[in-house]
Image 1 (tube, rainbow, N blue to C red):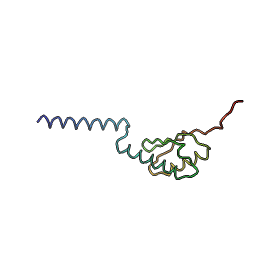
Image 2 (cartoon, rainbow, N blue to C red):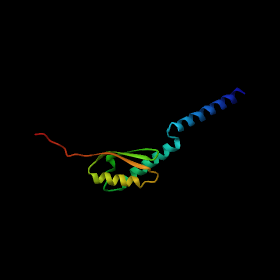
Image 3 (cartoon, one colour):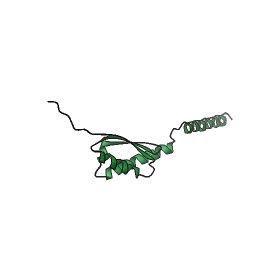
Image 4 (cartoon, rainbow, N blue to C red):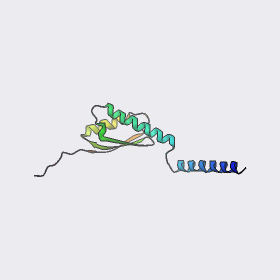
Length: 108
C-alpha cells in the first residue's frame, strides 16, 4: 500500500514540475530536440552556400527563434547567411547579432 502511495505522490510531483516549467516558458524535451534539429539544418544551409563561410558563424535556437552570431567578411555575406537560415523549416525568425570584420590596423 505504501509503495503505491509513493508512486502516486511521485507521479503527481513530476506532473506538477512539468506544468510549472511549461508555465515559466522553459523548453520541453521535444522543443529542445526541435531546436537542435533547426540549428543543425541552419548550419547545413550555411555550409551548402559557397558564398558564406559557415565556420565564421554560430547559431543558437530557442523555440524556433534563431540568433546568428560571429564575424562576417562583408555585409553581403551576412545577408546571404540570414536568408539561408530563414528558408530552414521551423525557423520563426532570425536575429542578426553578427559583426563585420575590419581591416587589420598596423601602427608604425
